[in-house]
Amino acid sequence: MGEAKPDIYKMFQVAEPVPFGSQMDILIADPQSDLRLILSHHLQKLGFTKIRTVKDGMTALLEMRRQPANILLLSNEFEGPTAIDVIQELREDPSLQRDVVILSSTPPSKAEIMYALECGFDDFLIKPVIPNEIMPKLRTSHSAFASHKNPERIYEFAKTALKMQEFDHAERIYQELARQTQFAARPFVGLARIASLRGELDKAIDLVKTAIQRNDKYVHAHALMGDLLLEQKNLDAALASYRMAIELSPLNVVRYEVATAALLEKGRVDDAISLLEIATTAGFENPFIIERLGYCYFQKKEYQKASKFLRQAVHAEPDNVSFLNSLAICYRDSAQFDEALETYNQILKRDNDNSAVMFNKSLLLIMMQRKEDALKLLKRVLAKQPDFQKARDKILELGGHVD
Image: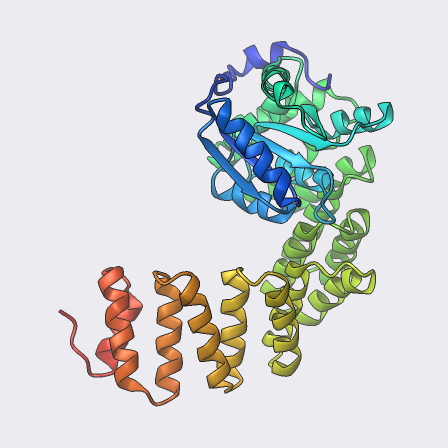
């Protein structure tokens, strides 16, 4: 925890975190529904009103991207991404913000405590949870995060400057962190991101190499190297870097998501499939991995394989609207219109105000020669979302009238 010296907070005038209190937003991430309910109940009794719950690490990351929480209670029982993966993503990804992160765990050994603190957790909440220990634990965790001995807020401060495109300011912070931390790779990964955003790819690659020299097990350095090499069109070397990142963190869905998204953007569908198959070959058949495989085969127009994987993903996550929508589009484009219609109806039964899904269903109805039904649906879309220009254009294209 001693990476940064206390005076760095004064040097960059880092603001104090949100004060501790019942107004704080708390996210509980635990695979066991009864534990989520118990924790939520006890927190409500303590006066906390902003409480959200999720059941896995990937959804926790998605929630943190959508709306950061002041306190994240993170279980150590996830299969993938694990709690360690989640906190590494929170620490490194510029699109994510982290505040207090508490590991919810069975009693840890001394080695497990040291490793968790090294990874960036602020404290532990021991299972089974004792109600009168919750509030003191939240307070001490918040105090640990707010401490000037904790470098995490400095890194968050640098990430915020990077996100705001204040590159000079972010660069000064990372340079100071690099100066004060002899062996850390993180500052050089941050500096590499800045160089990349400035279009200085060669410099960025050199900075990542320095990061890897400092810590060749630092997953994000290899992942960023993959991004940079892909940008340079050095595709085979990029793929090797992505593979290294995945091998270092084989149960982290995010690594597969980031790597395959970058490859798909360059049209390297087969390479994306080969990375995803690292997971499935190892028996790690996470729904997000399966959905990505379905999407890749959809891109190759191998609709039978695509629909097989997408159905598996939907079976594992039946309430996941994104998975259902991907399956519906696959059915539609492979001319399985009845199956597509049934899937769209399934989505709208769960989320009847989803304008994007209604619009996609209207396109399907047009393909099924049901023009009048399509027009009615498009007008429903506009009634709910008057600025939906594609719906407006489609109505006019079909010869309808827009009020």
